[in-house]
Each structure stands twice: as C-alpha cells, then as structure tokens.
Image 1 (spheres, rainbow, N blue to C red):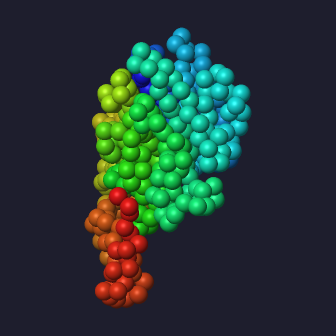
Image 2: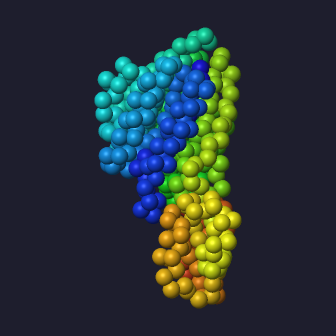
Image 3: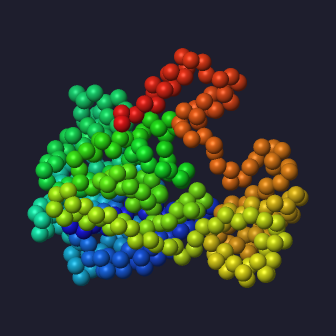
Amino acid sequence: MKFIHLSDLHLGKKISNLPMLEEQRHFLFNKVIPIIKEQEPDGILIAGDVFDRSNPPAEALALFDDFLVALTRLPKHLEVFVISGNHDGAERIAYGSRILDKSGLHMSPVYDGNITPITMKDAFGELDVYMLPFLRKATVQYYFPDENIQTENDAIAAAVKHMGIDTSRRTVCLSHQFVSGASISGAEESNVGGLDCISADAFAGIDYVALGHIHKPQSINKHVRYSGSPLKYSIAEVDHQKSITIVELKEKGNISITEIPVTPINDWYDLRGKFDEITSSAFRSQHPEYSNAYLRITLTDENDIIEGYRSLKKLYPNMVEMHYDNARTRASGIVPGATSSLTTDEDFIHQLFLKQNGREMNDQENQFIKTILKCDL
C-alpha cells in the first residue's frame, strides 16, 4: 500500500499581509498532482492544518475544494484522508464527512472518543487507517473521565488506547501533535516548557504515524514522521528543504519512506548589506532570484536610510522584514536574526526567571522546574 503524506498546507496564509494563495495553488496542482500521477499511490494522508485559521477566506476554501475534486478525477482511484489540526476548525473539516466517505474522501469527524478505522486492501491483505485529529488534554479527559490523565502525553496515549488498534494488522494513523524529539523551526506553535510534548511511545505498535504540526520534514523513528509544510512560511524555515513524503507498506513490518524534494515559485532569502549595494542595478541583475523572493533584509548602514523601507519594497515587493544592524542597534541590544543560545526548555525558563526576578532560581525552584518539565518518554 502506497501513500503520499502531506500536512500543514495552511491554505489562505498571508506573510506580512502578502497572500500566498497562488504559491499554494502552484504546489497542489503543479507539484502534488504530477507526483500522484507518477507515483500512483493508493491513498493521500493530509495530517492537519489544511487552513491557516479556523475561519478561512472563501478563496482558501475554493482552492481546497478544487484540489479535492481534482483528486477524485484522477485515472486511479484514491482514498483521501484529512484530519483537522490546531489551526483548523474541527467542525469545518468534519462538515459533510459522511457523504464524502462514499467518494473516497475521508474527513475526520469532530472527536467524540470514538475513532473507526477505514480499511483498505491490497495484495498483502487488509490495512486500517485511523484519523486522530488535533486534541487537547481537556477534550480527552471529558470522554474518558476514568483515565488518569495528567499531561498531554497521557491524553494522546489514552485516545490511542481507546481506538482499539489491532497491532497484528497493518495500521496507519494520522495525528497532529508535537512529538518529543522533533526539531522545530520557530514557525510552529509550541507551549513553553514542552508541556504539550507527546512521546512517540504513545503510538507504539502502529506501522506508520503520519504527523502534522512541525514544518520541517523529519522522522522521529522509522514509524513516526512529519512530512513538513509544503512551503516556507517564515524566515525561520529559510534553510528547510521542503519535500513530499512517499510511504509504502508491504507485508507487516516492511515499510519504506522516501522524499521527493520540491521547490517553490519564490524562495526565501536572508539578505544583508548596505542600502546602496542592495538597491544597485548591478546587484539586482546578478541576483534575479531576489526580485520576487520572500526576503528579510538587514541593512548595515550606520545611519538610517530616509524612506528606506518604502524604497526597498518597491524593488523587492515580497520583502517581509527590514532591520538595521549597526552600532546604534547593537548598543540597544538589538541583534537582527540572532539565534538563541538556549538549547533546552530548562535554559529558557532559567533566563526568563532571571529577567523577571533579578536573581537565579534556588534549589527548590530548580527541582520544581525539573519535575514539571518531565515528559513521560
């Protein structure tokens, strides 16, 4: 059984008030559809954050509708599985799901404690697909009050347990959560302290977990993977290589994962230099790729440029940020593009505590932080 795994489409997203809808349309129809025709998968897994907000604009709804219609008109029949993410309205994704099921379009219902798998069949036998939408601890607690649910990890583990998965069969699960061990870019939402982290062990026994939420493509282990977002949605993702994930499950235990790299119409770049250099005709002719790219521009001029932002915006209409890096900004402690040296949640909390209280944490406070940061890994 072969699947294409996608997630975090964020249809309708704007960057600095710049709509990305045409970029998204290009990805769906000029990248995904040709790859589907070439790879001939049996199913498509879309692991949440279809839209960028729970009440998406009409243009985003129309684009997703066009995409679903296109999938149903391909020569080879596809089973399409879509779950809601934290950016989606669960009710909107669920709307019409019982009717769409008949067309092979399976939209995750609003969670009510019950998840019924969709069963597919190939030469190796039957395979069950479970759709687990984005969940919060309180939701799972409501439906399973007898479970001892103290953390988000407990909640997802309980939800998976109550799915009643038969691990002797081949199984696939779509989920939209933050699984511990994932490398985040800063573009995704995550709670301070890692209190929403989920252990990969919560999905033990499932052959493939198609994750959404983290924008960087990556595997947590050989069974649990983030496909990543199709486009770069912030400067934090400038170094990401976006891709489409292909997962193939043969007999039980035989699974292979491959990536097909994809490039956007307009990429992201981090430019740095003096105003006269960046705006010169020679520079622009040498770098035509910047003309419509999404740019963060850092000017190193010692004096602020009058109308600098407006002038740059005329030359580079998709510029999303402009900063200065000079003696004045450094004296103020402003370092554009600086990356944090904090490597753990504990480091972050220590520095935040110091700034707010003017002192280091004592032993008792240190121990308290260590306790609450523990994830059940």
